[in-house]
Image 1 (spheres, helix red, strand yellow):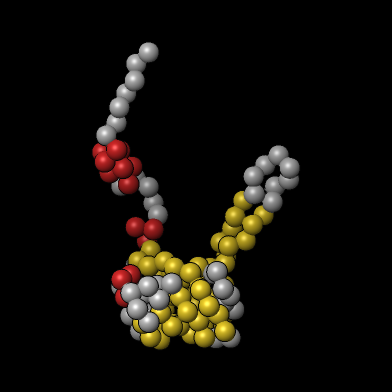
Image 2 (cartoon, helix red, strand yellow):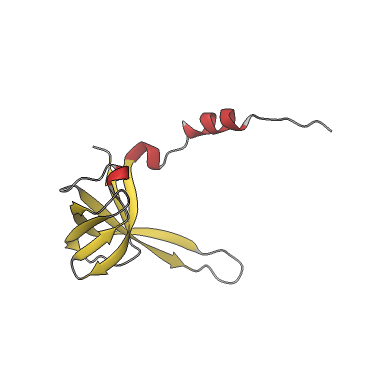
Length: 113
C-alpha cells in the first residue's frame, strides 16, 4: 500500500487560488448582532477595515428541507442595505438600514469595488 503525503501549506496554497470565495469578491463580511428598528449593531469593526459611510448589502439565509433522506439546503436572499454610521471598536459598528428589512443574524457584506 502506498501513501502520498502532501504538505499542508502547499495544498492550501494550490487550492486557494482556484477556489472562488470571500477573498476574491467580498471585502468584509459579518452579521447583524442587534436590530432595533432601523438602528443596528453589526459585527464588522475597525479591524475589518470598516469606515463610516460604507454601504453593505444584507442577506438572509433560509433553510429548505429535502425530506427524510436528503440533507437540507440553504439559500441566501438579498434583503436590503445598511450604512455604517459609527465604529464602536475593532469588532463592531453602529449602522442604519437604508433599504429593505433587516433582522438579527442577517449577513452583511461589502463587495470589492
